[in-house]
Length: 261
Image (cartoon, rainbow, N blue to C red; front, side):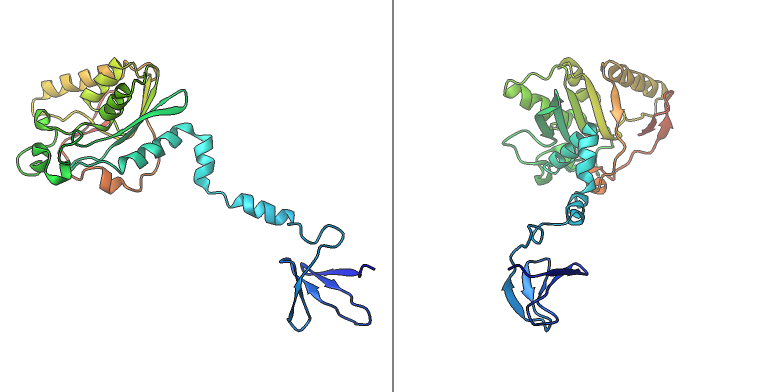
């Protein structure tokens, strides 16, 4: 004979024979007497006692992190966040950069900046220019002495090494590509570039040369069929990743892009 049940404040009160108040069954599924004594596991009655409420199910769904929602809604942001994770492997005394190459919405290659494989890392003194960047060389100078391979270059080279074609791909890099990386991506027929932090050609004292330099750089960027786009999103490792060494000239070009040189 089933015993009558009364619901009270989220618990179930069982009316025991000959008693005014029976055991209380909590949501956890155990009998608790009125004086707090645990009387063992409760068994569902009428199929409803052990089921989770819709409120609990909604609370579980609401616990999903906002980053997961953003990753599904914005694929560009998703790939850039992966590029930032790749950047953690970067080994350079200058900027730390990570890059991801995506083709048909699938990652086919990654890269970060550092010295060539099987050579001492930049932070171990492997690159002469980087080791003397605060003493001998100004920002933007002596790149012909720098042996570090850029993140975008490493991503392209890794794809080539393993026979992966990247024609029509999109590159996500944590820093706007330099002259060399832009040329190489165009030659590999990269479709579009997305970047997080700015990089611009170094301004020289010769204003004519500076204008020519900027014009040549813009000429490269305009050749990407899908364009070159800055993504606006937070970067918690900004201070670590972007070099604190700053050139002295700040200007704005005809497109409204701020050049920090």
